[in-house]
Image 1 (cartoon, rainbow, N blue to C red):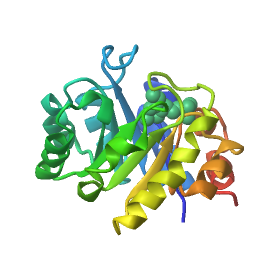
Image 2: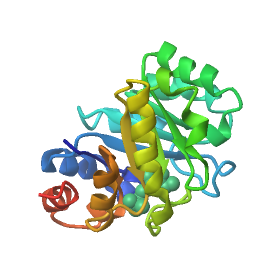
Image 3: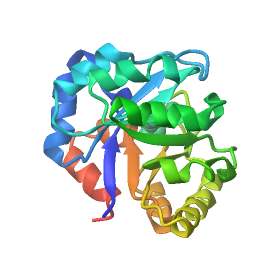
Image 4: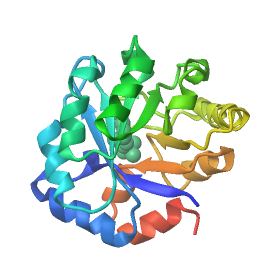
Length: 215
Ligand SMILES: O=C(CO)[C@@H](O)[C@H](O)COP(=O)(O)O
Ligand SMILES: [Co+2]
């Protein structure tokens, strides 16, 4: 069963709680929180305070996507704020295995994200330690960008790699996901779809979620 994590990057932040409740009531499975630092990516967004406000707005799991340099400095704060899953970028972590174990020691599930151009090989030696692989289908930094089709082939590669290691990991895709690109990803093996603009720019969020699930 495909799960959907709407990204709050696309909400009207003056109405954060109402926006989160609207997708929870519409049937969302998680809430995706995009954290950007102006260094790893050319944009600044959310810190632990907004993650904590999101925590108080919903019972859904919080899926925190850290697009930041030196994430070890902030992982404890995001877990204390209520993150259930913390995902770091392989490109930002020279000691990825250590960072993954820091997330787990703090009590959250651990994910590793890779940019569209990064080969999946970097995941090989941490796949046994993680709960989630996030394959970026846009260059990270902004919502509302166009889906990069060449990233799709990496989905099946990760699925095969995880299968070979007997690992049941989430395969999450993020960026430019809509009713046309979602099926490309789910057919290749993605089981968790992040969608910001597609869900939050529609008045009927339940219909948007159904369409993403291919219903
Ligand atoms: O991590 C990111 C962007 O860096 C994403 O989570 C986007 O926020 C998704 O937004 P849409 O492409 O669905 O509008
Ligand atoms: Co994201």
